[in-house]
Image 1 (cartoon, rainbow over the protein chains, first blue to last red):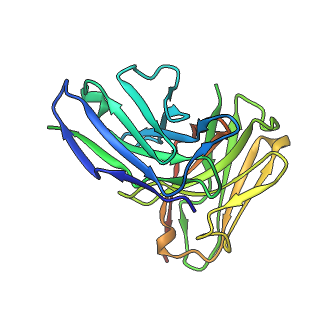
Image 2: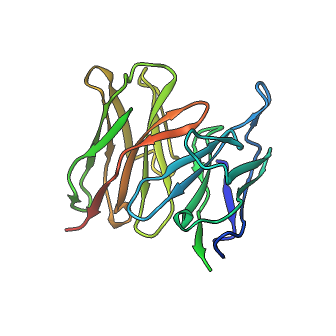
Length: 113
Length: 119
């Protein structure tokens, strides 16, 4: 199984400041045939299902604000929120869909400082 | 717009079988572009992938649950199902169904259904 490890477990950032969440996979999630990383980021707010923000490590979903960006390749990935808004308070999960069993990171709780 | 809705008993007794159904509307389940997943989340904890089924009926499961899990699909009825046998309190969780795509991972999710295992 591919183990996904996020850091930090929790993060407090001031409004308007940037936030960075790291995700590391125990094996590569890069599919060499198409040179795509099969890594997604989700946002989950209390009482709601996860919402897909980014797939292929850096491709934003339609409607996701451009302050959210993803980067990285292979085994090391980052989710960056460039200017934190109050509505960004949530738990963020990385997820590899490269190989079964699919796995999630443990989550990073993002709060306002 | 694709919508998914979980349904099933909210309370299951220990050692019994948990059975949930996910109804899919707003799209066809027959396309080979998609797979259909179950994910669960104990209160205050992270997401655990349970497994998935393709329209063909082919499945993949989480090895930690594989001996107890069955996921099946009924494309003609636009639904797929989860069966988990021999449940314990550790199976108490919010259960989500989701549509997955090879290129994105799970893109549409149901609102979830809370299942409690208790006598």
